Image 1 (cartoon, rainbow, N blue to C red):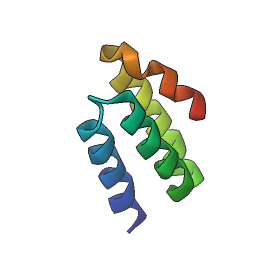
Image 2: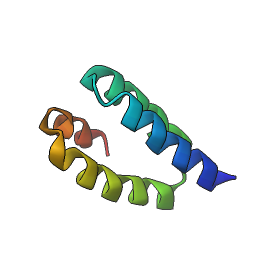
Image 3: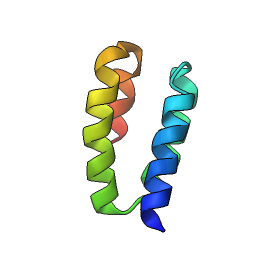
Image 4: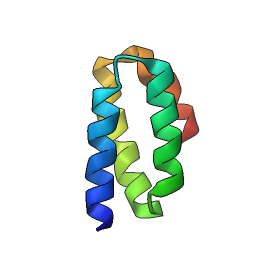
Amino acid sequence: MSRMIYDYTKEVLERVSFDPELFTKELKKAIRNLLPYELEQLKRWLLYFTNEKPELKKCLVYL
């Protein structure tokens, strides 16, 4: 079940990546809902994902 939440979170973040404010809002929600090991996975994924989107790099401070 929690794997589904992690995958869904990634999908949502990909969909809202056009707007840094919305991306930050969804990222904060994800931090509240995911388990600690899922947050580590999300952090690794975000580092990779934001390489091509420098406007989203500032959102990583919440992790």
